[in-house]
Image (cartoon, rainbow, N blue to C red; front, side, top):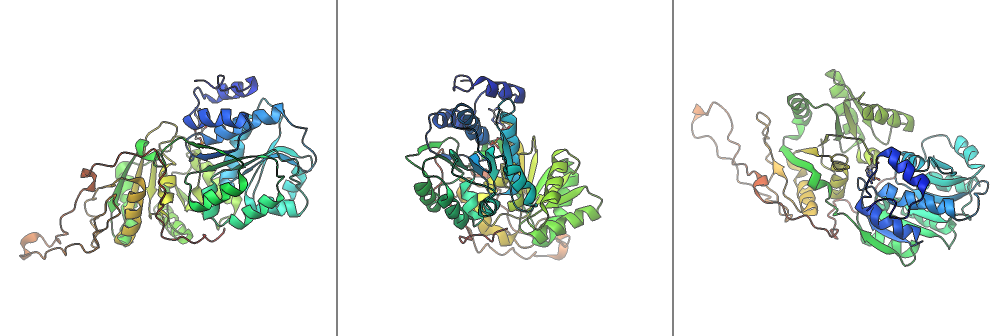
Length: 444
Ligand code: AMP
């Protein structure tokens, strides 16, 4: 199958040729004809599967072939994204695909001045990429009208709900014309997402192209058990031992990001951090420098790193495990993209055993544990497996019988859980998403 056989027009084919896209990915093969046919779409696909081109290419084609010229302060298509970085990234892709088309594109998001955005919208734009909060601000200030809107795309809809955007989405829904095409992309289909889809979509075609644990096939994953207080030391040790060149590191909190960056910089390591407290320009600069290999270690919270496409990223390190198991898949999906292989290493302390268990249950695999000599934890991480069982009360390590053991503590027998065969990856999305925190997250 080629892009031409999917019915794409010549200016788009030319752009794809320049980008080196030869064959449509599975999500593109299914989404492109359906969108061209005018269908609403409910698509289970995550970043890394080529979903952006899956919706953007047919959207660009429809906007070129159909509909009136864009009016002042209007948009003909709206792509909603959960984060500023993702909005930037999606916009960059859309602009590349549109390079030979007579269409205008623009991205708006918070954290930067609204005035230039209002100016830019005066003439209207064919495709507007936006985060929900800023879109509503622009609408309320009459800088944007949506009565000309032909198509709405909800990108990473699950993440938008996770980030507490459900109220904003309900508001946006009320601002939209009733007759429109709607495309919803989400990595998971929770009850809330189905509810949203029920309100927003009209007789949608469901497509489900990749298993949710798709990253697991191209990403080699393992866990290093360690005491919490020694994580930073272990990270530096592993980095030097493995001669890591470019690593994306995830920490749980903003403070955690700052503390690790300070520690690394203090050791003369070229590191930077991104999190929600940093101004947008600083975040973007750190990311750009990381992508250009000018920064070796980028430490990020989940909010800041969601959906980022970093070419050929070889390694992701979970300095802390994510609180929401789902985020693990997104994090490790930053590597092993577009057919490359990657590695994902998680530094796990005893406190995180329930998170580890939830991740294993979600991904249906038991993660291999590799003990790092001299970093064996004093607080043992109980055994876990893909069934979600945690052996809560491990046997206490026996005291050494004699003092002749060299003074080293016997830390008990460690099971290399990688000996347990991983379950076959499922092609169906996992319905039950184990989370520890089911409430909406605090908005940025
Ligand atoms: P996405 O899932 O949209 O974030 O895309 C993931 C990566 O795959 C991006 O770097 C895209 O440029 C790339 N990509 C998307 N579709 C194709 C394709 N058909 N052939 C080659 N690369 C692609």
